Image (cartoon, rainbow, N blue to C red; front, top):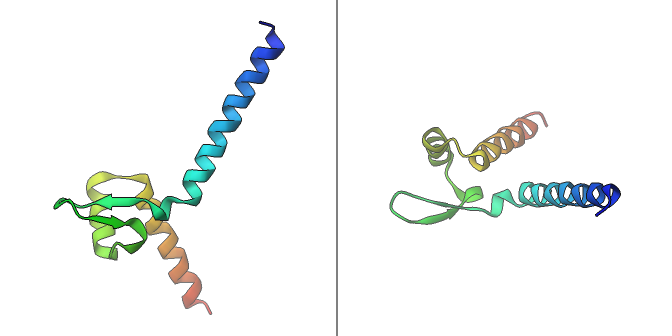
Length: 80
């Protein structure tokens, strides 16, 4: 194979990985969290206290994103 084909293939793999990350970021609120007692709750539906405790114990990035999003939404609402 030629170097240009290898370069093209590598660029396509990077682009596809980027698209997948963007898709995951766009839909993270649809993800489901499984509680200790095996209940499944959409991240967007977790109570604030449950969200915070789950994040403290798991350090899960999706939970962190939800907390940040909620903080900014609350801040924007309070500034109106």
